[in-house]
Image 1 (cartoon, rainbow, N blue to C red):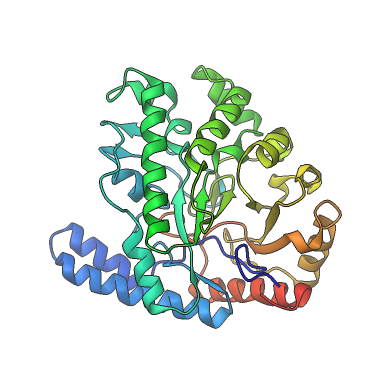
Image 2 (tube, rainbow, N blue to C red; image 1 turned 120 degrees about the vertical axis):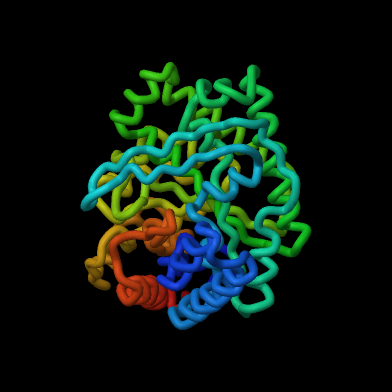
Length: 365
């Protein structure tokens, strides 16, 4: 059984924020709660998140992303005057609006962003801490050259150089602190197969296929020469905000380059809905790389059936050997702090289901 990532049972990182935490953050924003009091509330909530993951039986632990408003906004905000968040999605599920990046300063890494989060998890849990960071290409994907050059840059290549240096600095800082497990949330790749996304990119002057090559090259520059102790997986999905999604379509248009040209050893892939297409693109996964099948939905409260999940893993194993597969929810439960439309009770049931599924198939989570 695997003793290092990816584990047979995985989860993507973010968890539903407790009401007390959301209330404390609102009070702090209004000036009615001190930073010290907010930090205490955050630590208490993270302690509860650790206990939840331990009850479920995971070998990894995250902080639920409880100190962030969104899975990527906090990180990029530490690199300069940058915003990348949106609350445009309303109503029940369906396609939501893509967030748009605004870049008002040069990208610069000044200090470790998530080393303190890693240290906290290491001190308060016996499980392996997993730190989640956004992908290096998210800013460009959500604004294109126009967003890069609107305020901060005149040279696109300078932007990419700054991105590479910032992400490398953070990963090296995490490795130096003893972190051995990082998940990169780079959702752009999964969206390139959607004709609507392709059209939107073309309208702003980008060729979607050329962007794949550009983004792979940039990501590989970030990853080159990192310590071998640092295990990195990449999570791909098609959007996950308040039960909404941003894109649909198979991995087929990107699979060959994604699995073979990108220097990532394992991928967490969304397969919880027909929008993701079939498992057929997995035939292009080369030997030595692993796939975490995101089979359990975090977008709604419907509980998946164990027998059906087992059948889906068996189907995927026709393309990737069973010993190179693992299982997880398709995404986090709260990519933004408002969370997806499910209850904490259903969240725990779904997390436990992932662990029980792994134990039923491989004998261990």
